[in-house]
Image (cartoon, rainbow, N blue to C red; front, side, top):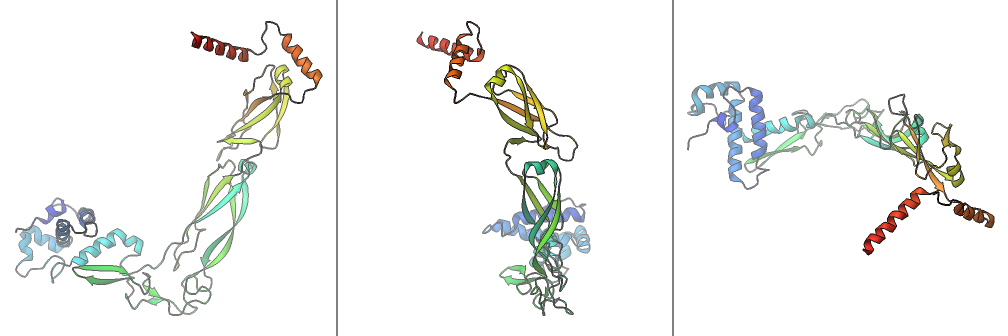
Amino acid sequence: MAKRDYYEILGVARESGADDLKKAYRRLAMKFHPDRNPGDHEAEHKFKELNEAYAALKDDDQRAAYDRFGHAAFEQGGPRPGGAGGFDFAGGFADIFDEMFGEFMGGRGGGQSATRGGDLRYNLELTLEEAFRGKQATIVVPTTVTCSGCQGSGAASGTRPVSCPSCQGAGKVRSQQGFFTIERTCPACHGAGRVIEKPCRSCGGAGRQQQDKTLNVNIPAGVEDGTRIRLSGEGEAGLRGGPAGDLYIFLSCQPHRIFRRDGANLHLRVPLAMTTAALGGTIEVPTIDEGRARVSIPAGTQSGHQFRLKGKGMSVLRSTSRGDMYVQIQIETPVNLSKRQQELLREFEKSGGKKSHSPESEGFFSRVKELWEDLKD
């Protein structure tokens, strides 16, 4: 059976550059890899073709020979794709493995020389007043820091880590399983490529120690519930001298006794005496900046009416402006009336005559009466 054209197998033009070849190979190899297609012999065949094609075309000399003579360039004793001994299946797979994961595993031959430390989370609770003003907070974070005794190397003073004898510093070892060559993390050094013969007494060879870290954090004015502050490099120390992780501070605001927050605005519900609502007057309400504001109540104010106090709300983050405060009126019905007070209210009710003092109430019940009459019809 005649072999397919290598360019056709990779799905690229003959004038394609090395980067285009690599991208095409990576995409198709991940698609047809046997681990993703267990028991699929067609996918296994295509995966072999891909590796053979890429092994031939990624080498400039072999590609030039193939462009001139085609498959005949590798026949009759000529060089075979992947090396003189024939196609190296394991080598082809190792190439794509390195391309896909090399930057995370520290690269081939180098092992995992350093690992970034983990990120940390700290929950900080604020009062509404602190969220309004901002705050300089001092927090204590349990974390790991670089060992001062070995400076993060994990080795005792005067010594240093040595190359792992099991993997010769590669951080990975290979084993043959039938047709496949499997590459895995070295069990002796756990991928580091190095081993510590004499561990540091302070950290036991870990290169870092548990310690509480005290930090001063600037909380800006206007932060909202759920705001996240990132402190770069204040997380856990990295392994084997790797960079430290980050610390994320999550802010939450305590519920306030009288104010309800809505973004930059504040809402305040004020119970108002019936007489003040009916006759009008002036009330004083507190503000979030520990001040007071006067609100004029016009005669006949109804329950649910809102008064807007401009610029009396919360601070706006990264701004000099402020939100507004809304004062919502709730009329309070008198309780514990004396007999004389009850008599006066009855007199008031009778003295109205045809003039209505409660137009909304009378209008509502008038509509209800009409509804009932319509239902009878």
